[in-house]
Length: 193
Image 1 (tube, one colour):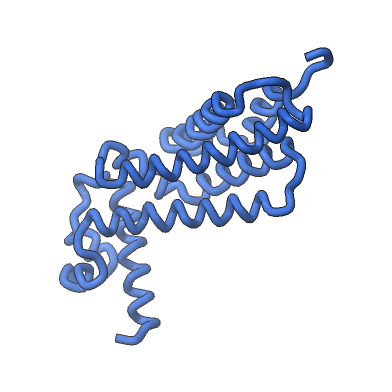
Image 2: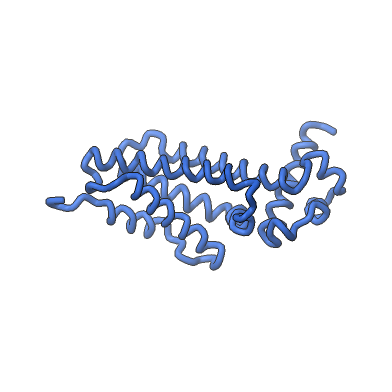
């Protein structure tokens, strides 16, 4: 099998897994059904992934890595904390809108312990980025006095709320600029404060 064919087959399996996990949930999707969706034999699927857990973990890892890269790119060269926080929020929401299947997959498999530690680590790193931006904003006077760690949790939870609302309704609350405005207005330094 050529490297190109192998890469194409792997992508077909990942795409099929993403689709079926998001539609059926982790528990209901089977490797046989994923193979059928990909148009290949179940034995071929097992050449690429040891099992359903390995396939799921690969999808989650690729998703997290891609979001981390996009976030880094969105923040590169941004010096002002207000602009940095706005870029972080817009990047997060835009990514989620483009990756709706992965968000569905994540939501439906949220209780599975095998991926929980990796996801928690990833989410902690996301909150740390927000906390750093807020701390810089407080230090520069761009944001009013606040606890950057507490604010990071609130901002992160607000973003997650927007993202998970997309799972329920296609257009539910999806307005990145409205989210940015809401959060930045809450952080804005007020005269005399």
